[in-house]
Length: 205
Image (cartoon, rainbow, N blue to C red; front, side):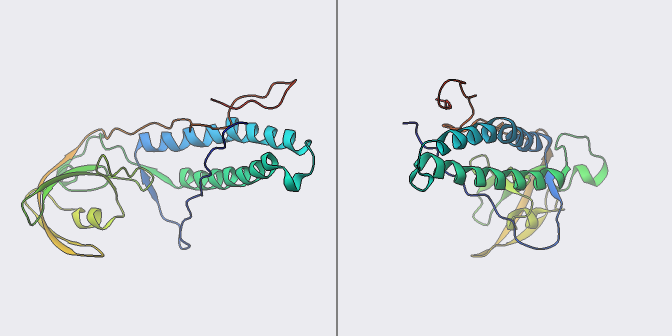
């Protein structure tokens, strides 16, 4: 028996007018790599598993068939989501040269050092909503903190209005440069290996 891969629920966007998807070049590449993997490797492999399982008796009691069909629905939903995100992408390179006040003020792609009311220093990088990484202190440009920091410059004081608190922050430094991103990696247990012609479909790992 092959190990079942945990099923991922697709991220659903709230209804409303279409918004620009600001993203770094590396972040967009990661979305494209996942989209390509799903389209060219995982979906075809899962489709083969479903076809094989369909020939093994009563489909209503066939765990491989039922799991495969559910996985296909989730893959298709994820593909649609990624397609929309990629189509709406507005690429901003954090390392691109900036002139005048644009090089000194906080905009998308900035890495900001600030001090909170208790005197503690923090460093955050402002990235796209598909690039958030709290371990690296990468925050979405639509987050309350990023909104508070926007257009500020070194020496400014801003007010953070968060759902649970209001806090005064002092901007210490604004920098622009490359923001490293983790590349897309094939998930463990993904159905990505080609099927053998004389046997049941193989799985990776």
